[in-house]
Amino acid sequence: QIDEAEVVAFSVPSYACLRRTTLDNHNPVLTDALSLLAENAELSDEDGRGVAFRRAAAVLKALPEPVTGVTQLRGLPCLGGHSLRVIRDILENGASSEVEFTKQSERFKALKVLTDIFGVGAKTAERWIRDGIHSLHQLQESGQTLNRAQQAGLEHYDDLKQPVTKAEADAIGEIVEEAVVSVLPGAQITLIGGFRRGKLTGHDVDFLITHPEEGREVGLMPKVVSWLESQGFLLYQKTTRNSYLEAKDGPARPASNMDRFERCFSIFKLVTDEGPKPASGHRRWRAVRVDLVVSPISQFAFALLGWTGSKLFERELRRWAGHEKAMSLSSHALYDNKQGRYLKATSEEEIFTYLGLEYIPPSERNA
Ligand code: ATP
Ligand code: MN
Ligand code: MN
Image (cartoon, rainbow, N blue to C red; front, side):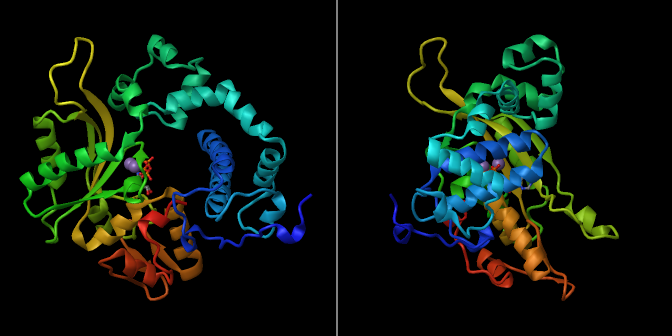
């Protein structure tokens, strides 16, 4: 028997960018369940449902203690009927039948295995599943044509599934730094993504590269990549060039949030053991996914904010900017629609101030 008066009621703002979400999650069972349903929706081309589950999970991540009963959730934002049903199931029966069913379903398992291959998205996986391909083995036997990214993804599948540790991220950081300063002295690199938010492991390592003198960063990525390649550090790389300047010359402002920085999606060869040569059949390196982004210094603060994540935090920042402030935020700039001008910033703090938000440090952006 629970006394109503003893039940803790929580209060949480509805935008994730108004909340401080640390990695200290008091409701991992509930958030894992909702995240799994979000993932299933995203893999099934149901992005709207995906976002709804992500928002619900993020609200629970922001709670200061474990939820023990659904009455505590009264008045909380972003918890729709569907999410509440899942939460109630878990609180009352120890598990959600929908989550358990999804986890066991052949379709979800196949989508997971196939999209876990670097270079394979939901659409490709969907097509393969329709052709009866549900496993890596079946894919290899099928004779499907794989592009270069997918071939590399398949080849390094086991390595890339292993979480990257902070120590590995730092080791890669040193190599990238050496590459960057060798090809452009004075250039700077910053660890971004999950590791900047304080995560202890990640699915990849993300770096932002810039130079304090505007313009000096132009053409930097191909040089960095060549240096890394010449030293044997890259197992795979695909560089896409900066398309922001071209777009600005056009008649219309870039409308989408797609960012246009010069960037490189790569698979790194990280030497894990410098000791004596290992017994045959053993290797002393592992493959690690690494993302590099180059930004001009004038856009650095926006790039830093945009690439630190989490993905939901970013989405919520842009939603806040658009809906509450009539501004458009991207990883390049902040545009004030009322004043009809871009707002310059040299730090993340300034961007939060323009947006009328209290500054949230990276370690509290784990929504
Ligand atoms: P993990 O530890 O799993 O890598 P993460 O938060 O670092 O978590 P990433 O997928 O590496 O996740 O993304 C890091 C950040 O980069 C996110 O904030 C995301 O918004 C941004 N990002 C990733 N891919 C793109 C892209 N193609 N275009 C623009 N921004 C992107
Ligand atoms: Mn990352
Ligand atoms: Mn990344």
